Length: 242
Image (tube, rainbow, N blue to C red; front, side, top):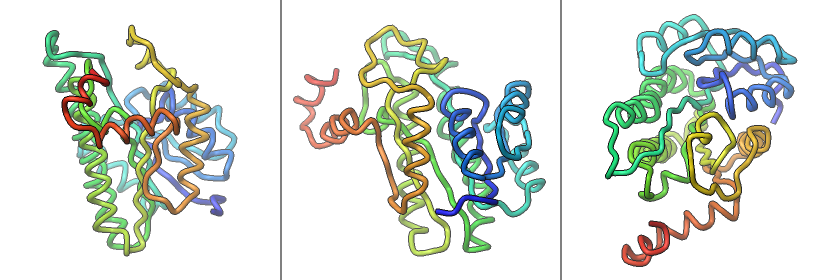
């Protein structure tokens, strides 16, 4: 694809995979609008990019803020949804505030963002939407109360949007990463197989954006285990994964 001169809105860009992807996209010639809650981190990121970038701090759970930024940006070529919240949590140690925040940021935030940008793209019959799911969203996992459910919702949302829009000029894609070494995964006290750096994950993420394929899950060997898990009967699945 020819990315030079394209304008994309990257929501959830302040650190980790979002910041690494911003660098990757900027080097490809894409002009970026950067959003997240932390204005200082966004400004620092924008100043470090090789290409043009503007800063638009917001909370993805605030639909009015999303509308205001979208109005200020005007016609853009695409949007990448990366905002996320995470705490490890199991059902025997339930933290209601954390569970609700994960649901609001990860899933409701994605709904809010899609509700703002999708009608605009549909009206123009043009646009590129990329949603970020997770390998954790394939099926329920131990210690993933809130996170797995919210990411499963994002993945189902992307699948429904792709079903509705695949024969239009609006391109919908879904990316499901595994473990990435970030501030969020530092909370985990368990082994994280095939963990990637943000830069490695950004390479795989952007490579998928360059293709016509709908969904991508990585790392490939780790993702294969999660896809296979969907096919296992309950008794065997929970014996292996739980």
